[in-house]
Image 1: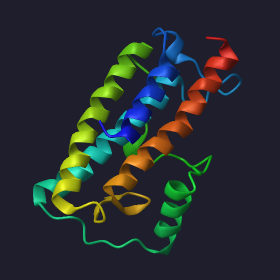
Image 2 (image 1 turned 135 degrees about the vertical axis):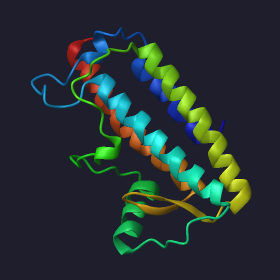
Image 3 (image 1 turned 60 degrees about the horizontal axis):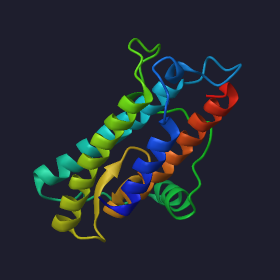
Image 4 (image 1 turned 60 degrees about the vertical axis):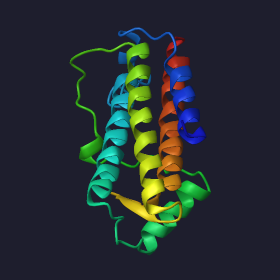
Length: 177
């Protein structure tokens, strides 16, 4: 597996280690309107699925996107991917928003395995896109950041994941689990 996605997989496993299905339902204290741990992970899983669909679409067509990033997209790419800054407080698009409330609690191990499965699939698609289109080609478009190279997709997933894993670790710390 690519080292960037492998790092993300390790960080997810660490963040969810030992959580039972009841503990994954914990919200930030005094903020029950915010996502619980499982919903945060569902958001990440939906993000991985969206990336898989975007890459699959380009691979099926055997052609990268022709789109070019506009100025706001370029600035977003630079800020997020090069500087590693993920803005706080941005509302997730409906496509990657978890269902609320959670109807089927899932333990940390199962969420970790679901993430590992998605990241393995994403790794295969990224490698295929990189082989087909080359490492410098903007192969597929992100809904906010615009067209990204394969390595930018990997880096986006890592930075986005770390942003949300900090939230999970803060919930765990607040609830002492």
